[in-house]
Amino acid sequence: MMSSKSISRWLLAGIVMIILYSGFRASRKKENEFTVAVKSFEGDRKGYQVFKDGKLLIEQPGVPGVSGNTGFASAEEAEKVAGLVLHKLEAGVFPPTVSPSELDSLGITY
Image (cartoon, rainbow, N blue to C red; front, side, top):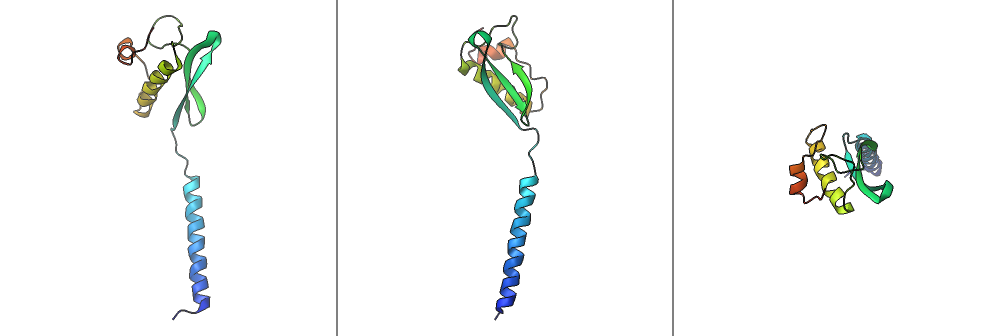
């Protein structure tokens, strides 16, 4: 049978291990984390922003891949294209260009 002193030592060792492991996990920052945000620009134009590790990487106030500076018809359309751009970035594609045929496949009006 284990003495209470021995049990206390094992319990203390277990607690220390848990604390060290928790600190190790918290210190490992995930790099290359991309996020997107749909935003209204001047004149109520819809666009999006892409952030990498919390820092602004791309600001897209208009529909990409077409001439002019027309904003998206809706926030939903901006979100669809931002999702495509996010997918490309996560796959390592930079710059994440968007073609008119990709816009058509997403049902984007431009």
